[in-house]
Image (tube, rainbow, N blue to C red; front, top):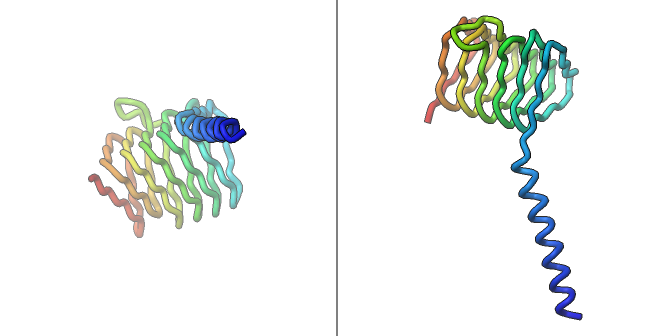
Length: 158
């Protein structure tokens, strides 16, 4: 009986470990192809993978909402507007516009919220900051960037 309990306990622990570790390796992709994603005040959105904003798609995060992208945020041909005290965390990179300075990707960080980017900020499009953007690695600006009066852009490459 004692040996049976040990086997069952081992199977349960093994199954739980497999379930926990498999969740971490599953990455998803959210692609907005020309539609609007609207986050109402206080809303929460988590993307465990890449988020693409294409074909004039729009993402609007309103006051007190929280958006977390556990991956890269690509704004190739659309716009992302972070309004009022919306908080956004991107654990990898933020890329606006396409290659060669395609100005159709637009990032707007309005007052008074924060955009935290753990990776790179590569701006090939149009980015405007009225508030705070923290970049964990390098900032590559090949497009149009406006850091408005009172705004803070912190680039702290390791």
